[in-house]
Amino acid sequence: MYQAHKDINKSPLRITGLNHIILKQFLRPGFCAIDATAGNGLDTLFLLRSINPGGYLTAFDIQALALENTENRIKTFFNNDKPNYQLIHDSHANIAQYIKEPVHVAVFNLGYLPGENHQITTSWNELKKALMMLTDGLIVPGGIISLTVYSGHEGGKHEQSNIFRYIKTLAPEKFNIHVTRKWNTVKPSPVLILIECL
Ligand SMILES: C[S@@+](CC[C@H](N)C(=O)[O-])C[C@H]1O[C@@H](n2cnc3c(N)ncnc32)[C@H](O)[C@@H]1O
Image (cartoon, rainbow, N blue to C red):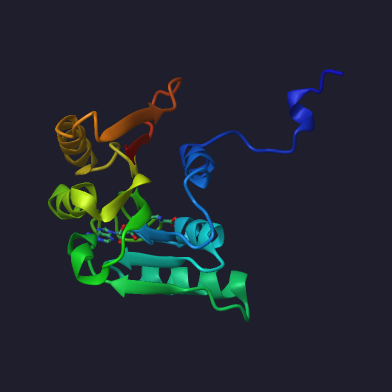
């Protein structure tokens, strides 16, 4: 029997939700994941839940407030359980100082912390260093890097055009790259870029 779409209790698909649906296919308990921009901790919690038990998560942010929000979100969810994670108050540009193990999934939700200072935002200069480390071997074959890019704010367009230039340099025999965005929108919509390591 046909079931009307409205009977399915779900909200309209957003790029962040789409990202999680896809990333779920790449995450298993015991895996190693990075949230390169912790922010309010939504992606961090999603990753930690997906790799727990036994996995290890590292989350970066340059703002102490973001790491506090993230820590609170983790503690509220996990309560007395103790998942394995570290929150790093540093730029993702310095990823190599902290990550010594191969990484299965790395997530970059770019831009600024919602509701806070819009001048404190991700930048191509920092992002480039992290991406180079990851694509130079830190991501395992079968692993994935996800970038959600917002071009609607100051600096976002520059970041987006540089990311597109960078992904064009990646060898198609080594990386499978997908780009998606909401199509029927007037305002610039965030773009989801997935770099799968083959
Ligand atoms: C859009 S928010 C991230 C949202 C977050 N993933 C979530 O689920 O709530 C972007 C975050 O990137 C952080 N950020 C900016 N530059 C950074 C850098 N170089 N390294 C790490 N984090 C950075 C900002 O402080 C901000 O908290």
